[in-house]
Amino acid sequence: MDKYLQTNNITLHYIEHDGTEPPLVMMPGLSMNAHYFDGLVAAGLNQLRRVLALDLRGRGLSDKPETGYSFADHAADVIGLLDKLGLEQVILGGHSFGGLLTFYLAAKYPERITKAIVIDAAAQLHPRVGELIKPSVDRLGKPMPSMESYLQVMRDAPHIKTAWLPEMEDFFRYDVETLADGSVMPRTSLSAIMQVFQAIMTEKPTDYISQIQQPLLLLNATEPYGPPDYPPLLPRENALATVAMLPHGRYVSIGGNHLTMGFGDNAAQIVQAIREFITIA
Image 1 (cartoon, rainbow, N blue to C red):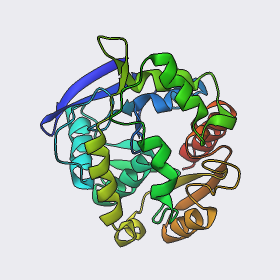
Image 2 (cartoon, rainbow, N blue to C red):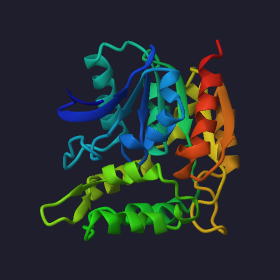
Image 3 (tube, rainbow, N blue to C red):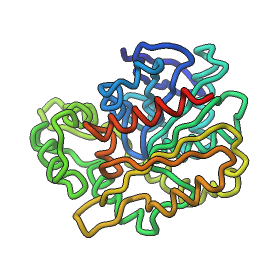
């Protein structure tokens, strides 16, 4: 169910999937949208908890202000959402940038977060992260002749081509809006993403990750993010080093790469890992 609310001077869009309390609030990656978590829901995520999947500012159907893309800005949006919904405490999770934001919120707002789930993010990413995410960012700000042409470009992308699954199509259809002439344009703001990337490059999670006292599950995709000779976006050693910094950290490796880990059998692995994690006292 699509929902909207006003928070931190913007309109934030989120998708609610019915389930039990306390809710699981999920935040997507750098240029992704709330439908990235559809694969996890299809694999049974909302059988564990009610799920609120967010479009972060600048993405999807949420507002896209010209400025205001720091970690603090994003965190204020999320805390504002919790306040408006009367949610004193939640389980917080995020993929990629959403995972980095999860670290930030768990450290800065510990009273609001009971447990944290970080999907393929760590204190230090791969040193070639800018190069590795370039194919994903390159789609932004560029119209495509039709929906089908856009989907074909996505199917042929180096980090997807060998692992395309039919259930990815809805995620990518939501990624764009159809213009009057039948062409399509990504909903996510390129300017916003460039500002967020700059925030990522200047933020120092090592300054606060060790302060996180809540139980935290880190899920790590282990397959190449691109052609077979490419590395995973988050090297295993970086993920393990981050877990070692946490007083109550737990590491689980997941099949697929940084994007494809959220779909099909890989999504089922994630849901099983979350099921085990949230049932631990």
